[in-house]
Amino acid sequence: MNKIAPSELILNPDGSIYHLNLKPEHIADTIIFVGDQNRVPKISKHFDTIEFDVQKREFRTITGWYKQQRFTVISTGIGPDNIDIVINELDALANIDLENRTIKTTHRQLNIVRIGTSGSLQSDIPVDSFVMGKYGLGLDGLLHSYVAEHIFEKEMEDAFIKHTHWSAKKARPYIVRGSEILEKKLSGDEVFKGFTATAPGFYGPQGRVLRLPIQDVNLNHKMDNFTFNGVRISNLEMETSAIYGLSRLLGHQAISMNAIIAN
Image (cartoon, rainbow, N blue to C red; front, side):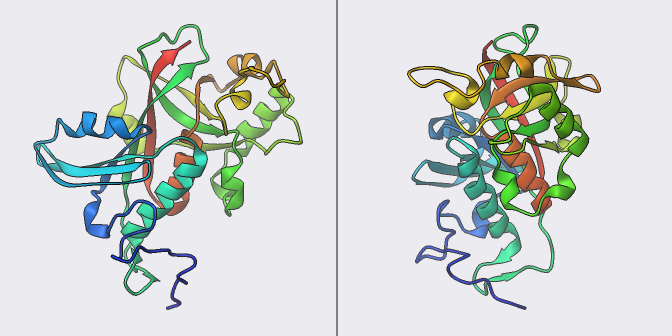
């Protein structure tokens, strides 16, 4: 079996994966993503016991037990680029023999739940409600760096591109389904569902104007009015589509839950 080169699989001197500073034994099968490192202990304080706590840069990880189930909480930082680091390195911990630099013959599937914050694009989704991303709508282009066409919802993408008159100068939007298994587990009467749109930035890419003019001043309004088979774009943030896309490609389950902080 071919070994993965040190330039591709980068490890720290202690054998941990480069950015996350983790070893395989440090992660649970169920992983909670938060953006802010300060939110990690806010979740882990509910654990019955904590077995591991480490931080490198913006990536803080705490693993512990809650009601006889093992959980890992990780802060991802902001944006699809950070998600690219976190999910690839978590998958490496789960499915690559780091010592021998070879892919394991048995696949380990992770369950990833993002708990984040975002703004709502719909007037009937109020502040302080929860939104589940049934689909991730990527405006960021990240997944086009991978062989990923087979996981995209092309008919939905084409409808969105037509509806918004999407600029050919920007990356083609991509749409990926969230985990149906985790959706069933986390659905509830007070949980809204829709497309969670993922922007590659906070200001211009989300329609905010300070001193720079933006390419499409009407984009958010167009997104408000887009529907496909009764599913609307419910919210706009900066991580979900990358989480869904990379998780699907690597054989993991992922769902995104966002608390609405603005409408």
